[in-house]
Image (tube, rainbow, N blue to C red; front, side):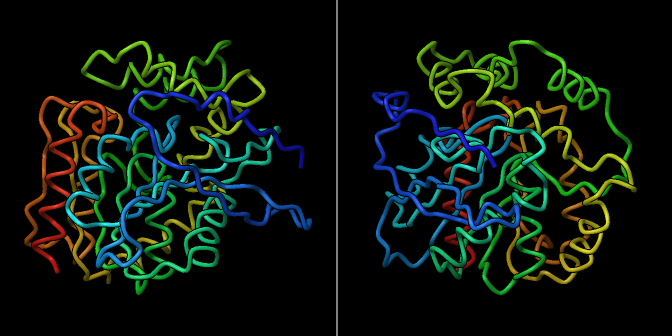
Amino acid sequence: MKVLRTPAERFVNLPGYNFSPNYAFVAAGDGSSDKLRVHYVDEGSAAATDTIVMLHGEPTWSYIYRDLIPLLVHAGHRCIAPDLVGFGRSDKPANRSDYTYERHIGWVRELLFEQLGLGSVTLLLHDWGGLIGLRLVAEQPERFSRVIAANTGLPTGGQLVSKEFSSWLQFSQRDVSFDIGKIVQSGCVNMLDVEVLAAYDAPFPSEAFKQGARAFPALVPISECDVSSEANRRAWESLASFERPFLCAFSDLDPLTKGAERSLQRIIPGCADRPHVLIRGAGHFLQEDCSEELARSVNSFIAQTV
């Protein structure tokens, strides 16, 4: 597996992102003894009662949680925000075929459970963070105290594919530049500063570094015959008995995940009788549009479910 690593100077003086880097090594997953370096933010006290793990999605990185982390740490929580393999400061396999749904799950599983030894986790999921994180909840529910799902879901290939997702899938595979900053901006209601857009571009100095970002849309199960569809169906069977607190915090202006919260609320017992949140005036990247409201929802949910 050929692996690229974004130069450290690309991450210097990014606005609002003053966190010290932390690294762990996980198995590459290709049958070799190779390791991949995975970056994660780790803020707050290790002795905190609640540890919040925040999983980002496509095509962002832990930078998207920069405004939430201080607000959650101020409330007394420990916050861990990994960069998925292929994103942020984590290593980036150079071939698109190196990225699979199951490898992503394995990389995050090893980081959180084997390298960091986490348990009693509060899990905050966004976009692809949910496709990965919900599988982990299904596999090892005992490790999670509560879950917050924000503009995400767990597709099995049995759902109708929206026009918006079909367009996004085609764009991700065909667009020549695949400008990350512009993609993030297109999923926001607020206009982002030029420096913020540049921070989203920072992990990707050239096209060679974008293979993980280009791969993600094509890994979403959109057919019942897709390679991960059966595993996701089994995950839903497990989630149907997950009784620990589960909150949906979706935005009202996200066409990609609109309606996905209904499946979560209908099937997962932990969703029952919860004050699910609809964040108004926010697009897909609600962390950019309404970070303070999302942080309040997370802090309130934790306080109500101790």
